[in-house]
Amino acid sequence: MTSSRKRPATDSLPVIPAAPPAWSPGDARPPRRATPARLQTYFLRRLAISGSVAEAAAQAGTTPRTVRRWRAANVAFARRYEETLGGRLEILEDLAMRRALGADRRPVFHRGKQIASVERHNDVMLMRLLARFDRLREREALQARALSGGGQDDIDDIALLDAASERARHQDIPSEREEE
Image 1 (cartoon, helix red, strand yellow):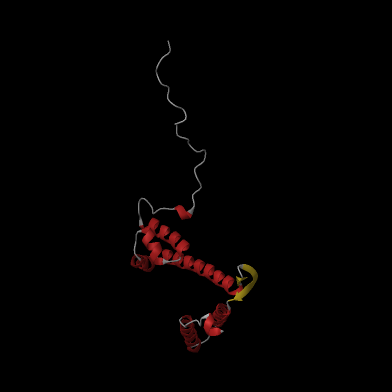
Image 2 (cartoon, rainbow, N blue to C red; image 1 turned 60 degrees about the vertical axis):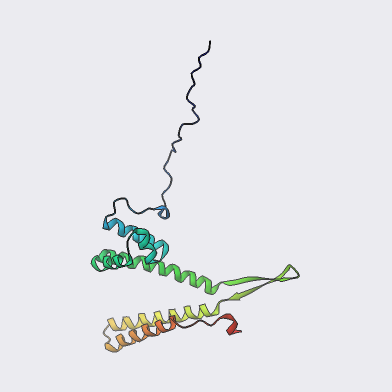
């Protein structure tokens, strides 16, 4: 006579992976024990990814005002914050340069078939980038002169360049229809 006892199924046992999955900064969660140093580090990682202070602060569970207080109170955090923003600025400049120099290819159709493609270049963006690099070069030259023994005139020139930069940044960009 055979026994009617059931054996445990071996197929339902959990499988343990040999190596833990690779950790990536995009999968990071806020720290479990939220100490100020851990929150600041998490905030800086989020800022490097998103580029938005408000978004990074919200993901870290703080407010932008708290971030401003951290910057005022902690010199090391302020330095790391500036480094992170500098890295984001380089990424944005590279992206803008790629968009300014790259061509936008648009297909041309006739009776439902593609017969050609037209390349359009973003000349306005290219001109803005060139003007920005010219202003940066002038500002660096003025700062070097001011540090090497220049007077108050050079500092006034730097302030004028900054004001001109802000005005140029807020100018309206003409649309493509206005240019043609």
